[in-house]
Length: 459
Image (cartoon, one colour):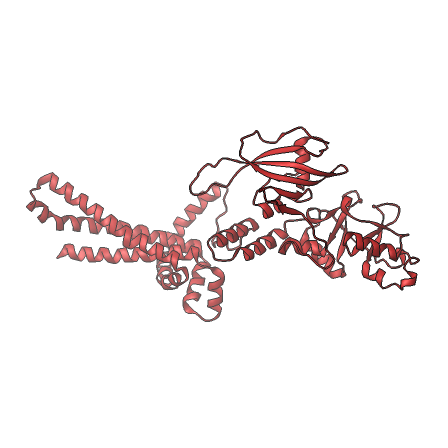
């Protein structure tokens, strides 16, 4: 009879252990924002959970202490009880003396450990991970009461643990950090898309929005060599012709050179000039002052500047005060939502997938933009911003049509392959515009050449 009473007590201790385990896992996985919202709405379970989360380190220490005490008590009570209950059946089987004691206590140890792991550890852990908010609401009260009752031992143990952490140069935290870095947010969005929690388009939009704040004007501006400038002595007629030829609607107006920006002219202002006067009205008479920003300005404040000043275009200058290029409001929006084609845009071919599997790319694309288009992650570097710059760095000279750069691209391991072979990619210069690489062909090859090899060029 005593053995059965001990087993019943052990079962209650296992359930208590399960409460501590469930509380521990639910507290660290529950969504704090949801708990705060429900607590404000008057949910008592959420209110108690929020109290526990405000002293999370102490509550987790209490849970660990409770788990340790219950496991020790289970071992002290259950194993002898099971061993004594097994004595008679084992004696009937012919065991006696030392063999009887060894076998009975061995079986008792295995049984008590297995049942404790299932009832007191694994089941409550998995339940808490599956339903963290519900589990936290159910376990917060007994967990907080136990922690309050064992305050002095917990405080002592916590103090000793914190002292060890400080000796190692780590500052202890009472609450779990709820904020996430941009890198962590991007990883979370990617996992959510892979698991089907959000669709790919939404994931792409969120990832672009997160990356938006990390970029600067230098990352998105149209470089100076690609900007179509007009001169102050040009006329309204010249603006209309330039718009017809380029498809652009706004143009920087310069004085003696590109570094002397007089302002910006819009094609609608030129169209607004009387037809008979368009060849006589100079741009200096219809332009508006230009907004100038440094190339190091981040996109968030840049967007604010454009909105506050009611401008669609800004002139980007380098550290020496020279014109580095231009950036438009459309450029900023495209960093979030992708390429936008309006009524002024001509059909462009920044990237084109050919039937033979190769890609024709603009040399002005950034490596991250190439990855978005092709799925191939080209290496990024501090000394270049575009794939044209990547090719020039590998060549070590000005490129010519036909130059080839071969790269070994590391692949992300999948479930079937722990250490995948690198992806071999060839970048071929297809077209030059002066000394600038205008078009690049990207080809995935099956051979295994050395990284960044180059072939002979054709002029």
